[in-house]
Structure formats: structure tokens, C-alpha cells
Image 1 (cartoon, rainbow, N blue to C red):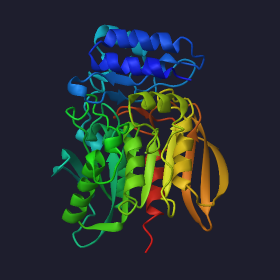
Image 2 (cartoon, rainbow, N blue to C red; image 1 turned 135 degrees about the vertical axis):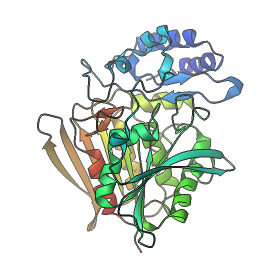
Image 3 (cartoon, rainbow, N blue to C red; image 1 turned 45 degrees about the vertical axis):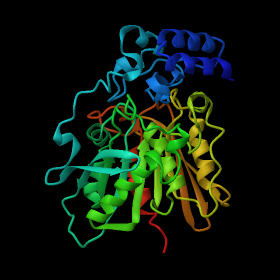
Amino acid sequence: MLNQEMLREATRLTRAGQLTEATALLQRMFQGVHAPAAASLVPQIVGLPGGVPPTIDLKSNRIGGAVPKAPGITAGRHRPLFDRAKDGTWLGLRGAEHAPSSKADIVPEGTKFIDGKYSNNAGSRSYKLFIPSGYQRGQTLPLVVMLHGCTQSPDDFAAGTRMNFIAEEQNCLVVYPAQPGGANPSKCWNWFRAADQRRDEGEPSLIAGITRQVMRDYSIDPKRVFVAGLSAGGAAAAIMGATYGDLYAAVGIHSGLACGAATDMPSAFTAMRNGGKGARPAAAGPAIPTIVFHGDRDATVHPDNGDRIVEQAIGATRTQKKVHRGQIPGGHGYTRTTYVDGQREILEHWNIHGASHAWSGGSPAGSYTDGEGPDATKEMLRFFLQHPHAG
């Protein structure tokens, strides 16, 4: 169990700008922890002036053994946290360390990828919108909202997931809200702050506002609007599903955490390391269809967080469970567990064996991807299109 007093002191030191002292304290704390790769589980912290909550950046790693140079994951990202603090790459502040993607890696030929911006009382966010070649005004199409991970951008996330290419095949629009450095120095969605976990407040209001703006400006089927994300973006997607079940028909969460898994920095440490046992109870009413992907060697966000997401999504709904095991030729094995409510499958949980903190089946054109796993993008979009809003 993590020492809460030491975590609080590390928080104080970080906010005071004493990063070396905070690092040393955390290192001493983890020396007594016997789980594999304990030090590598420490989230990335950025001390901010004026009492602003610290950033928690979810870096790529995996539990136990040597970390392979998976496609799209640079070797530099796998150096221990405390080594990286010595040479100025403290906690991912240099960004994704990944070359910008070319347009051919981001969108298919003949399609559009345009800029947009949304503002409300909580601030403003820019976004990129993918419009498939088959879009025609008057014909309503599905919309997928994609929330990137820490240090990523809409272009990078689009390239790594190849969501635009699959959306072109299925004739869907895709919008990528962008988290700016001004909101979080590592461009993480602030999933761990209570103020950013409530409907019509903070970042949830901005993401929902972007969604509604696209629905207003384009021909979108309101029954087929979905939200997905990776890592911090996955945690943000869980929040959107929990707080805007009337807006989003289904949710996709890759390597994320359940809504309410943390409400401050100490609880974020605990959730990332131990599995987020303090996640918010599910709301009353029918379960929102959810598809979850998580690597069982993820040492950044503990794999048990995937189980917490499942529990939260199901809530009090009575379900039957079915288990299927598979293997990607030359790649990872996986266990796919489905939960059925009567005749309706409401949830899928993909546990990817040997995978770390990266988008499964992704392209090396983007960061934080692992091409050896099942194609999370195809499976998410397939699941989404099978689960429109009822009525």
C-alpha cells in the first residue's frame, strides 16, 4: 500500500518546484514495494505555480521483464522515471518525441481533415474534424469523438489509431478535441480533478460542447454519437460516458481508468498503481455500452483499472459472461470477455496478453502504438455501430 503521508509531501514539494526532492522521496517510498517495475509506475508530475493542481502524465511502460521497442514507442520513453529527471526530459515535457506524421498517414486521399474551435464559460478548445468522402448534407452519419493521450495531438492520435481510414470505410465523421499545454503542460486531459469530472463543468463541458457543435454544423445521426480515448483520454472518455449518457450511445476506453478513480494527485497515484478501487458507483438506469482494451503488462495504468471500468459500466445490470481467447499471428494473445444483458451484448473487455501501455493494433506512424495486438480501432468502431441509442 502506498504511504499516503509521503504522497502528500511529494505533492507539496512538487507544487513548490522542488522536483529533485519530490523524486527522491518517491524513490525511497517505492524501494519498499515488491511489485515488479515499481518505480516505473510513478505518474509524471509537473509542479505548477499558484496552487494549480499538478499534471499526471501517463507514460508508456509495461510490468516485468525487458520492454520491447514496440512500433511507435521510442526507447527513450522507457528509461526509468528517475533517470529521465536527471537530463531535463522531466516527465515528458519535451513532448511525444515522435516525428510529425505526414498527411498520408493521417487521412485517406479525397477526404477532409479541418480545424475547428469551441468556447464556453470553462474556456476554449481547438479540434480537428475528419469528414469522409461519402459525406453529403442531409444524410445523417455517425460521429466518433477521439480523446488523445498525454503529449499527443489530434494528428498524432489519428495517425497512430488510423481511425480516419476505418471511418472512411464505414462513412463516419471523427472529431479530435485537442488539450492545450496551457490546460496541462503535458497535454493530458485532467481526468483526476474533481472539477473535471462533472456534467456541464470544466473539460467535460468543453468536450460535450465540441460534440454538439459538430452535430449542429454537420448532418450527424444523434443516435450514433460515440466517444473513445487512450490513457488519460480513455479516463476522460469514461467520464463523458458516466456524465453524458444521453449524448453518447457507447464508449471506448483504451488503457484508461474509471470515472472517479481519482479526485486529486495522491488518489491518482493509488489508482494508477493499484487499480482504482475508489471509482464512482455506476449511475442508476441501463448500462451504457462500453468496450475496453488494456494490456496485462501495462505498468503505467494497472490492468485492474480495466476491471473497474467494466464494473462501473455494468452497475446493477444483470449480465451473462462469455469468454473467447484468440491469438494474433506473430503477435499478442488476448482474452475477449463479453457481457450480455438478455439478448443484448452491452460490454466487451479485451485483455491483451503481453501488451504494455499503447494502442493495440496501431500504426507506427503515431506514438504509443503496438502493432502486434488486435486492431482496437476496427473493433471499437464495429462495437459502436452495433450500439446506437435506443428509441
